[in-house]
Image 1: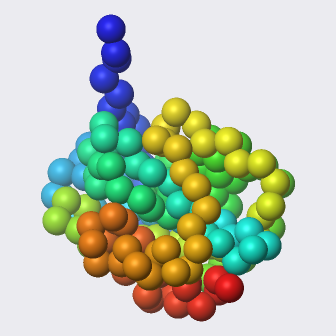
Image 2: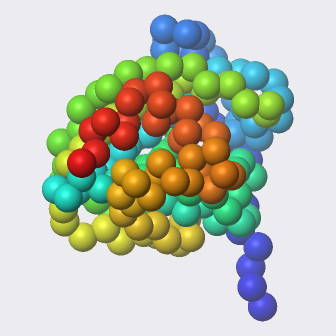
Length: 174
């Protein structure tokens, strides 16, 4: 019998102001129920030496944007955790990546119908093995052309598409 997976709604997250200063805490469920509590998130874009971008495939059981392609690594900053710690933890948990040098690109606010996130965006160059965890439905490297052909077609998360445009991500690819 297949076990239905779900995000841990009781997970405690920091609530922050627009500068990223912690002003309180709330559960993941509270942050995702339309309360619009601003909570910090990390994203890591992984580019290989061929100039291709690794994207994760979000499983169908995910509450937010199921069955879409998204940023290689994305996750919440846990209560009591710094962004760099969250980035390293999420990269290891989701892709098995431990040794990488990340460059901070920007921090911005993203609002969807059910949540409000303060997203800390990083990029790294990486050619070693990637081992997606069972948190994901796999992943693969995409060429710039493949990404361009699929933009606006419901293949990618709206957040990824917005971010790719905002930080000129495709310009970083060959």
